[in-house]
Image (cartoon, rainbow, N blue to C red; front, side, top):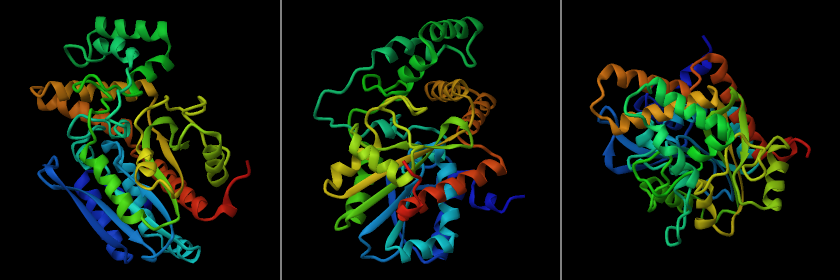
Length: 365
């Protein structure tokens, strides 16, 4: 068995304990941001935990986040724990003048309850909006929404056929964008971006303000799963739709960095993304960031797992057998439970960190 597997967990409580133990073991400074109202699936405490490794007065910070989309946290948490054990990485970052900041479980509720959304049914990575302004409409979502959550799960043959007919007519790209781009009108619907800032949104901005104030440079790697080829960590640009910041990001992480704005990414064009917390909180810092999106199952299967989970959310009367089957589908959609997948995750996240702190290692444009 691969030694990497010891860094990964089977539930949130185990993942959190491994993170805390690894942080203490390497001398990192820990800060806990406990959830004020919610508990985990087993009644455990929920929190966003921050481990700071490096000089307290470091001016350059590399931040790695996990669990922005709850159930995707098993991947990012394992990579964070592995890097907390990587003493060679620590030494190289310190000698280059960088501090490492690991933010564990940005959405701890979803992590523990095996949901992509948070306690408010909000997709956190659609929630960083200016809520004082009119929120965007998603007419394509309104069109497909009645087909997403049939009366029974799995869908009847007729319900499945009707959805597939619509997808065949409109195209898979239309379907992906319609469902995943984010919507702000239906609080009970899928990929709801919220109508106010959530606790995780507020807390992430608190973390940036607390640990980023007075720094000059921030690089961010946010770990996600569920899109793209099995085990490949697609580096997706996290920044504004502007050529200068995109070019800077590619200079750091290489020409393989994709963008939601030009169609090169497996992700649809999205609104309310978490990176917007940086200019909202640290407007003058030199910033660049990527999401590493690790592939698991084909897109249609991932979307079906999310549909099933949302069906379960609105049908709490479902029996335990059906609940277990749906949750197993969510697990498979967002976690590649094999040694080669885990090893690839750790290697690729570590490589992204090394590229961020060592510009000489960047791939040529």
